[in-house]
Length: 262
Image (cartoon, rainbow, N blue to C red; front, side, top):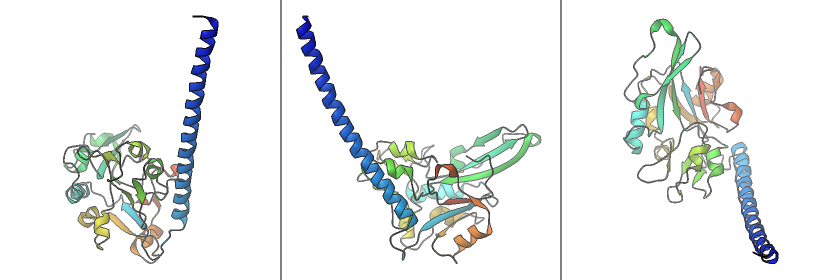
């Protein structure tokens, strides 16, 4: 190939690359702008919910009362038609066993539905506790911020929902959730997660997991109602959220949360 022909070829390649990069930068700028706008809206909405006549839902779980029966996980599957196969849960329970040597054994057989079998000898156990998990319904939810089509959104009552009509199953939200609360439905091929039984809330019914808990370890309520049972519980107990350093605005508060919890 002659030098001139080679130069012309390189110029064409350079031109194509410049066009591609320009398009990519434009698209990235639009995406960043869109994400920033959504994030700003979330931050404002989290601080000042628009309709103060509506409840702003939060959740509390008292670890000291949880007996690991798995009733919550089973009720959730039945109420919300969650796939029966293993590893698909909107609501599940983990058992933490802290050994004398400082190591931690964490198990969740079938989400806790089938109960737990102690795997560590009594003499090796320093402490053990159950940790129920579900969507934290964050006010600044990472899953909402990364959704490219707006399928994940925050309801006026502070419940994080997924519009299946818009979801494209890209898994961005699954990866973004720091609490492992999302999965792709094996049949519908869209994101699935806890909705706090939103369909029941709209009828003034308690979420299924709350209704069946035999020890009253779980509760939900209106964080705006300063005299309500949830706010009263939060005032009377030292509660924490999981991974507070992430600043997600999590609204799932745990009482007696151990430092080993993840």
